[in-house]
Length: 401
Image 1 (cartoon, rainbow, N blue to C red):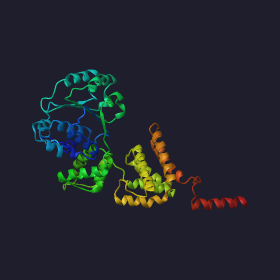
Image 2 (cartoon, rainbow, N blue to C red):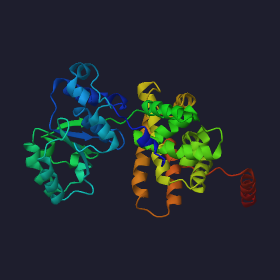
Image 3 (cartoon, rainbow, N blue to C red):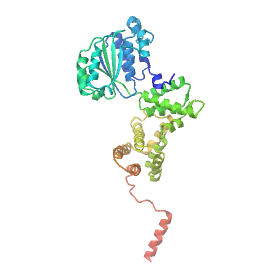
Image 4 (cartoon, rainbow, N blue to C red):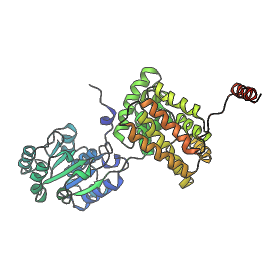
């Protein structure tokens, strides 16, 4: 049997398995208990947070034989049983009651007309025919208009679930006829917990710092985190026969810049040390890191200081405890006003670097300007060396004679 990637292998099969979207799963389960199932839903949110997965579980639940026949099970459990004929057909991909469309590649009026023709036919088993349309914002304006009448007066057996990452692109005439659910970005702690469970099931030892690094790289997307973990496991097993994942290996694979380099920048700015700042710039350039990516993460680094200033706490800083302690220690070197000026400088620099040549020089210049932001009075000339001072005094003496 061919290998199945982690994102598919550990895809949730019931509402309880969907991470960090309880406000949505609870609402859907209550509507199932009360028999108040709507005909149109819009699931919006960041990529990889569970939109299509929730749609699939919902589609399986409305046709679950046990939920239809057992009122007590419907009231107490409200989950697809996974054992009835309808659920098994869905798991095997043979269910005719659930249709999935990719609007990115089927976005014409003709595609929608074909869908409208199919909607007329009722379900073969169960109560509903469910149509899941992914990336619905990719439909053309004409396709949306062609779909409008069907959505306004759908057959009693039809349910439409639209998934999108760009809710603002859906016409108000469509959105107003649907129930809208906004999926949250998944917290880092929940991603770490999920990844830790996957590693246990796969028989892999993993360091907590390594999981946190993967979670931070995923930026709130569970699917991204699982895909990264898949890549990391392949790299770790190749390097280590004990099937373990260490922080340094993850950082090496992901080409991730360690927090130490960002602390070097803020220390150089606080100390007014241009040589130290240029050393960081040289490290970034020599190791092939992207300058834009470095500036983006540097802004996040400075943001952590602002969080600390305003909350007097590190609870919103997503870093290991030793790093949080260093933030508390280094925060004494700056004022909030200086920190905000530094962030403004970096935000402007990000815009300029996109359209400028000579990235290396401009990148170094941006970092040196951080020192100027911290020490506005540092426009003095560099101090002369002892040899230069002695030579200068000798020259002055000769002129006086």
